Length: 353
Image (cartoon, rainbow, N blue to C red; front, top):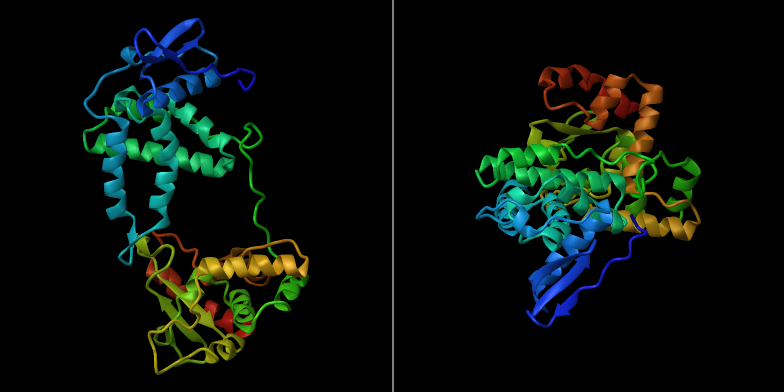
C-alpha cells in the first residue's frame, strides 16, 4: 500500500469546507483550517492507504452519543485509579496513553460503535509507521481492545463492536514491517568483567548481587536495612512490593555469605527504613549501558544479568529450585509449594552467594 500517494487536503471555497478526493469521490472533512477537519482527513487517507478501497463516509457509520474521545477520557479516569501500586500510578497508564494517541488523531470524533476491525487495523498501521516493535504494537492493540471491553462493561459500547475488534489477529513474526527486538540472552562473563572494571563500587556491587541472587534490579534498589532478616546463616528479604504482588504472590530474596559481605557495606541501623542503594532502576540501567560503550562490549541491560543468573541456576540445579529463587511461581500456586522449595533456595544461596 505504500505505493499510494496521499491526496492533499484542499479548501473548497464555495462551501468553506476542507475537501479531499479519494478514488474519484469527494469527501468533505469539516470546516477548513479546523482540527476536526485535519483529524477526519487523516482517518480517510489512512484507511485508503491500508486497503486501497474508497473509505466510508461518516454518514454511513453507526451513530451513538458517545465518541471515542469520550470513551478514552472515561477509561483513563478508570486506569488512573486501577493501575496503582503503593499509591502511585504504574507505567501501564502511560502505555495506554501511548496507544490512544494515534487512535485520537485518526478516530477521536467517531462514535464508538462506528469503530470496527478495519479502523483498528488502520490504527495498528500507524503504530507500525512509528517504528514500534511487533510485540509493542500487538500489546498496544490489546490495550485498545481492553478499553472497548471496559466500555462494554459500562454500557458505553455495544458488545458486537468489541466482538469485531477481537477478530483482528496479532502481527506475526516475519510477516510485518514492525521490527522484532532480539531476544535477551545471558551476558558473557568477559563482558560482565569488562563493565565491572569501569564502574564505581556501588554499581559493581549491584551487578554482583544480581548474579548471586537472580534478583530484578528494581527489587535490589528498594531494599532497606529493616527488610533484611539476618537471624540465620542465609539472610532473607521478604518483598511486599514486587512485580507480581498484585496477584497475591510472595517474593523472597536469599543472601548467602558473599552477598552478605556486600550488603554489610550498606546496612544502616540508624536509618532502618532508608534504601541501601538510593538509585533509580532506570539510572542503574543507564549506567550499565554507558559502561558497555566505554568498555567496548555489546550493550546489555540489568535484566540480562538476571537471565544470566537464571541460566546458571538451571544448569546446576533442578527447574523447581530455579523457579523458587527467581520468584516465577504462578499466582495459583500455593504457599505450600514455596515452602517446599525454600530449603533448596537456601542451599543455592549458601553455594553461589
